[in-house]
Length: 69
Image (tube, rainbow, N blue to C red; front, side):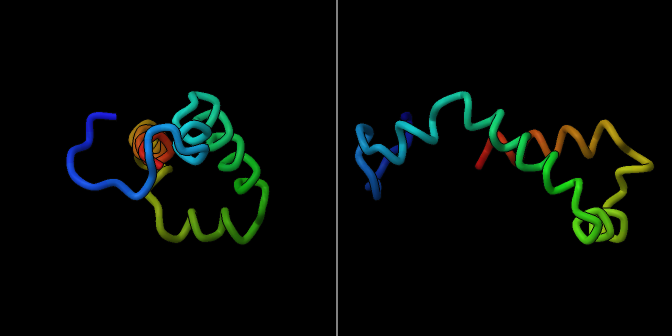
């Protein structure tokens, strides 16, 4: 980790070890796919997103969010 300043967890913390693994990105994408199967979730996306006008931009923003979290 390159962050400076005080940290809540040490670098050897199980929390950081698990969440820094690349498979977490795959798990995040899997979670988004499962959410897309729920009608209420998709109704919310349809009301509050411009995915129809800019599908690649929406995909990029979603991937950025999943990678950051």
